[in-house]
Image (cartoon, rainbow, N blue to C red):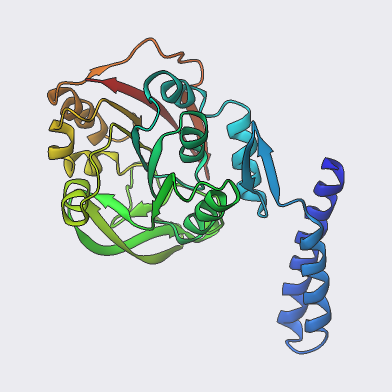
Length: 292
């Protein structure tokens, strides 16, 4: 079945490429017939992939790659943190939820109540579809917005070649030039950004017991906008991705520790380093975990 699925995916993308080329040459001839072929092949693809009793919408090859990486231990340290520290019915804020791997894991495995935040419009659609196919709409509440150090309307800046469901490395409000080639052509998606403290206060959201932050560069601004939340003793643990190439990330650790948290060193760290290659530039990110 897996080989058949791969063959149909290849056929789908070949037909799509051929369709675009021919439509460019002749915008009228045979469009309808080619579209029918494209959607017929797409309908043959096994869209939902099950990993450890968790279902994921893998209609797109990019989301399929993400789920395979997750299955192969890409976030093993974060799963260990969830298993060890998040108790039944506790509240997790998943900031930078992408398509929902961490949210779904916490809700299904630990019966957590999850609030997921994902600003990218395509990822948000996949996130909610994953919530739907896992019947988790009563356990996971998802918000299509960014978290920030100030409450503003701005843009989510997306490199156009990464404008695909399941992709990450987007930037809210301004591009972090430490990790992105500024010469790339970008798409600006209109987006709301909230301070976490302001969001909780304005909409009477609960104080989380646990927070996970993975937003590819904006972690420092999110922590800056969360002073009241970090001070609240209801918050027990924090998982946060750090990039040594970003100067502000060393300040993030200091802010967290100044609120009474200490770094957890006994989570298995064999999978905490994530080598990501973006164009010709390599960068290494590290997950860090903190407990009060």
